[in-house]
Image (cartoon, rainbow, N blue to C red; front, side, top):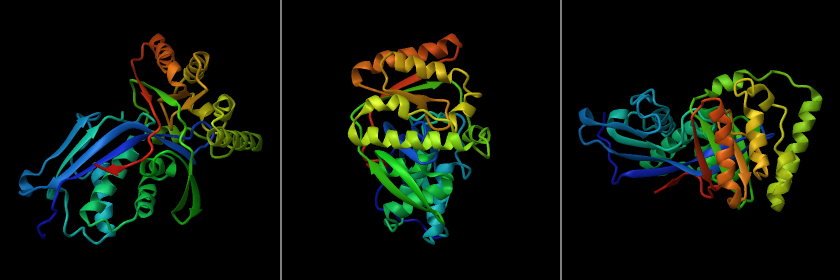
Length: 312
């Protein structure tokens, strides 16, 4: 194997994301101001190469070829015909995770986006943002988290078929996102498998109308529309079986002044949108619901991230 050459350390920062925003199943997503960071440098001695995970998942995430971050890097090397030049032992890798795992905040998308961007830079930045995002969608399986992870802001992902995704960005709202994450993980696969394979027409029409209303809310800053606009009949009623206090969390957030609230992605995190002055009370109210169930929580008061994944 040829010795790898890279003139500097590559550093990447990737935001957390929230998908669906209620009714926009597998279509809508937004990036948030909570970040994972990746640092990659050449290992002078492959026998001493290190793969370090700090923060969330440090005790359980694999530090070898099974890690999805490395799989994303390797996918880039394969695509750019560099896989004979680079292997896991070519690099010292440090991943610092602030995004909780399997929480509905896009931790897997963040890892994949970080790996793709880092590997592309190592290879001389041969891929465009769009090409990197398309690869991310292919690896992730759906676009609602990975697209805002790359592009930032509030994104609409339009599937054109043949792995082609067009992206439309909505205006970034100047409101806060309050996230309440319970102290247990919920695998996305499990949360997706609980969904039905067919839906009643009236439920599909219900969601279409709410997506239209939600789009208007973001485009006109009329956030009072969000309580109705974030209603959903496609995924939340089914996923509520895995999160029995879901409606209680939504009601508690709205009672304390949230414009609207919903399940974040596949869950179990819940997210509420509000003015900054209401954020603390909403966070406490949502945490209180879980406390009654003797479930510990983490709460985050976040802004919408503007830039998406970026080199630092």
